[in-house]
Every structure is written in structure tokens, then in C-alpha cells.
Length: 476
Image 1 (cartoon, rainbow, N blue to C red):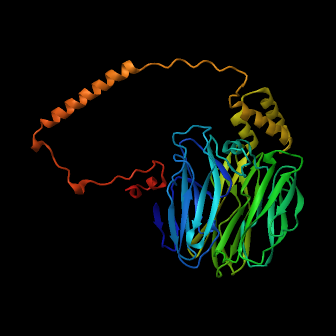
Image 2: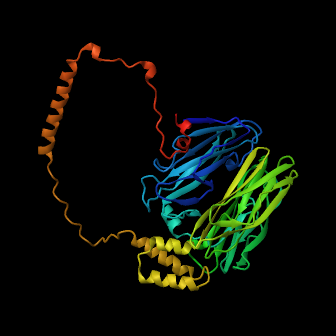
């Protein structure tokens, strides 16, 4: 078991040259061959608990060896209000396009508090980067999600984790955004949330909708999940649905402050300005908050870093736009806030023309694919989604070899007898070993140089792409 004891007020584990994602439940992403991508675990935020004293947190994973550097349980210790960024890295080394992991979990727990949270993840090797947040259906694989899911819209609560008192009633805001002409039906469930159902219309000129919901906490402490399901009207395919989740923690103290960015995952057909917002909620003392935004090349924004003075219990929303420049690209966006030496960060993924990119990745060059691509160029975004999904299903099915149960399998060839090779080979090896032993006994005693004990040092072997190996001194 590896142990990591952190006693500083603010610790950031830097991984130079490695792109990161924030830990999100039901997140499935792609990784280019022979590259590394890390998922940042923020402690104690991702557990949803802010202690008033030193607590040991455990981080574990069920990911298969060869996919991740998190193979042993890690123990992290922090003091009150400390924030630790713990990167878990994934590797595309010696893997080819189309290789996918099995679904796995990252588990964060605090045994002495009897608290634990699981996050479902998975990844595939692909030539272009993609992130999808979607719960796997029965029988669905990681490959199914990353190859066919398209984020036509995004929906999410302004805060994905809230802290309440027993019996408290609270109004929460849900955001819905899409640049397609859609009617999105919404159904909610949990903690007496109201309204139970509603609908919104989105378009290229009116993409962002805000909905208010009220909910009431029970008269006892605990952790409760509220879900809101969004479904594109008239489409029965899985890619037409999305779920927003809100965790309500009753009877616990909130962290010093929180940060969230919206949208989290969104696709647009053509390059254009996309509406974004970040929300900061201050639960601690009044103070200064430094905001920042990290953009990759190919994106522009009117966002300006600033210092904001916030009172205790206040909330601040910053609206801005981000504009991609390329027609078929995928981008990672990171928002940051620092106050009193404590960092919070949140990530967003924006893609352009994902429908065409996903289809071409699996394309067999058939006539129906070419016909769809021509129609896609001249149609409104999100039109005829049923045809798109049926085409994807056919392409995914054509990548596997069907089994005909009526075909008589060919006879297996007779096994080859290698005995005549093995027996002489073993005899030769035995003779060589005997000759070596005989010659070694003829050496004089003074020809042997004893190895001093203090010259023997253990060697620690790390994965060549492990973040530690990016800092040479950390590898020894």
C-alpha cells in the first residue's frame, strides 16, 4: 500500500506535458495511441465532505493493469480546508486504435468517517479526443458510448453538490444548452423536487435555457441524489437522452468554496461562439477570489481573469463566450479559482462536428454512409437522429464477424508431434549447464571479488509515462 502524507496548506501535484480531466461519474473518454491523459481527483471535494480536523482519505481503482498507474491503494491526509489534487494517469502505450478498457471504478473513501463515493469510468484508444458522460445501459460497452454518443445538448445543475439542513427547502437552477433545433422533455426525481416534468425549446439563436426547481430535505441527515432526465422529443435512441445529477448532503458543513463550469460536454456542428458560465459559491469567510481560464490553441474567448471580493454565503456567476476556430476539433477547457491558498478547478469539453467524426471513424465507405454525409451538410443540426443511430448500429455490427450457427465448422488439423525436437534440445541444454559448472569450479579463490553489502541498492521500476518520471529526481 502506497502512502502519501500531505500536511501543507495547499498542495498541487504538477504533471507537466500531460492533459487532465476532472473526475466525473459515468465519464468515458478516448486517448490517442502512445499518449498519456490524467484524471484529477480533488480531495476532499470529490468525496463531498469538508472535515474540521485531519482526515485520512483512501483512493483505489478497479482499472486493469496496463491502463492506469493507480494499481495500489493510496492514503492521502489533509488538514482542515486543504485541497489536494491527485492525478490518476492513463496510458496509450503499446495499444492500437480501437482498443478499449473494461468499465472500471475509482473509489474515494474516508474510513473513519464511514463515507465513500464511487465513480464509473472507461476509455478507448482513438485518433481524436472525445469525452462522453453517460450511464452505461445493460450490455453496453465503453466502445459503444465513445463511438456513437453525441452531445447534442447538455443539461446540468448550477451546483452539482449542495449542502442543506434537515427539513430545509431550497430552490436550485438547472441549465440546458443546445445549438440544434430541439424540443427537450425533462423529468425530475428525488427529494420532493418540483416541477416533476417540463419541456424546453432550443435553437441556434436561442440555445440556453434556465429552469428553477424546488426541493425539500428530509428531517434527518444523510446524502441524497436528485436526477433530471432530458430526452429529445421524437427520438427513441440512447444518444437522445442525458441525465443531470445533484447530490444533496444534509447535516454536514460545506467546503470553504465551490466552483462549477457549464456546459460540461457539448457538441456544435460548425464553429461559432458558445455561451459559458462559471459559478463560485463562498461558504467560508469573506475574501478575494482569483479567477482563471485555460484554453488550448484553436479557441478564443472574451473571458478576462479577475479578482472578486465575495462575502460569506454569497454566490457569483461569470458569463462569457468561447469560440472554436477549426471545423472538426475537440477541446478541453479548464476553469480555476484560488482563494486563501486553496485551489478549485473544473473542466469542460467542447467538440465540433462530432457526428461526422464518429461516423467516419467507423465508416466502411458504403453508399448509405456517403448519402448521409451529403444530406448532413445541407440539413439542420440534429435532424433525423434515428437514421444516424441506425447507420451507426450497422457500422458497429459490421466491425465484428457474424457467426452462422448453421455452418459446419472445419475439422481441426492433426496436432504436430514436436517430441523429436524437444528431447535433443533438452539434452543439449543439460550438457551446456554441466560444462559451465565444471569450468567454474576450476577458478582460483582470489579471482572472486565479493560484492559489498552497502553497494546493493533496491531498484524502483516505474511506468515510463508515470507522472513521477516526468520529474527525474522523483524516480529515485
